[in-house]
Image (tube, rainbow, N blue to C red; front, side):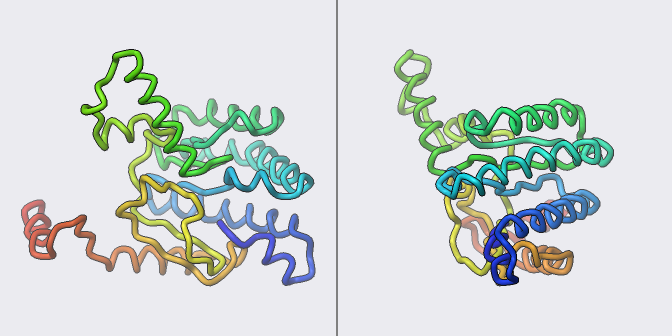
Length: 234
């Protein structure tokens, strides 16, 4: 969800205004994805690198997160949306962390769409954390290095409860992943949208999904193999 601050500055507002507008867009996207029956939606809300931003902006973002969760948790429950989080939650201020935990607790029994916020999250950091966890298991004799597989590695990651993303959307015209789900995005479809997040709308979402559906996902196979597999399942 990139471009909030730059969107606001281009319109003569401070960056905070853009973040507030971006939160409203997030609410709309969440509701639409849930209504469409999408099983998973992950929003990259705050990266490990975002801690380097000016202190007043970081504090504003944490307050906005807290207020948004306090206001929207009831709506999540009403829409049967389960809230989850990936990232280093311990770095988040207490007042925001309490609202995060409240949302986790109150939506625990929801079984519709899983909404995950990536907060204080970094793909490299997630990989390093998984490596450390596996290294400890090897040191304790619980695991042999030669037994480590893709599946065992992925199970140690913070996002192990999520499937690999099928589609990753990046707004604001930037054409990079920016440390998001580096392990998991190996076969994700990537779309880079040339508008800031506050301008992202339902048409953009529907166009992105239509483009995704038009692509043949081979995962290393040939087109003929994919067609045969599809026919067999059909």
